[in-house]
Length: 213
Image 1 (cartoon, helix red, strand yellow):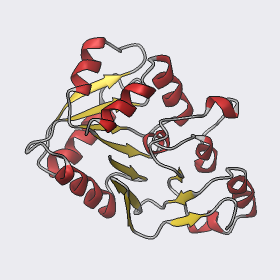
Image 2 (cartoon, rainbow, N blue to C red; image 1 turned 90 degrees about the vertical axis):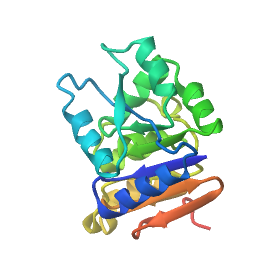
Image 3 (cartoon, rainbow, N blue to C red; image 1 turned 45 degrees about the horizontal axis):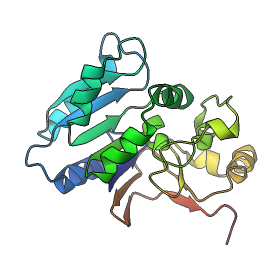
Image 4 (cartoon, rainbow, N blue to C red; image 1 turned 60 degrees about the vertical axis):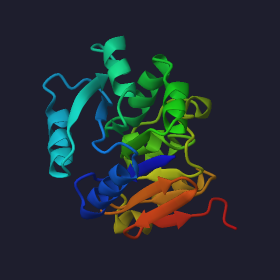
């Protein structure tokens, strides 16, 4: 299992983690595919991400959108890649689209068969057991708890874009306590890399034991 959970993909530690993930992939020249969290008709965010990978000497040529532009051909091309990049955006909308296309088991199998996934912000939260943590980074989460279950590829929850002010905010702490599970709080220059059973931490994220041990 090779997974990256990032807050801000262009941050120094995120680039280190993406580079390390690419080096862990068996392919000499890994193929990278992109999943948009929502329609990106002008490919604005896709183009930005292509540039990021180009700096790492890797080409990203596959684009998949799960809503109006979805095609089975694009999905097949994505699953033929060595690495899938899950973009940031509206976490609840992204998860709903993944479930509507019945892709939870598909992506779990992709990882089990040696594929790697880079999750950014919303995309990172999709890798966890639940997207309930999205409420802590400003997303609207209106679904019932039972509908928030995600890919469950790691055993903790993830909160991106965390600031020092949030860490001392009482309302933020109250929301955090509601998660009732281990949670990594990551600032924009924090990043996590899961390689097999080993979790490598870059930067200085806070690990919250919920409930406390």
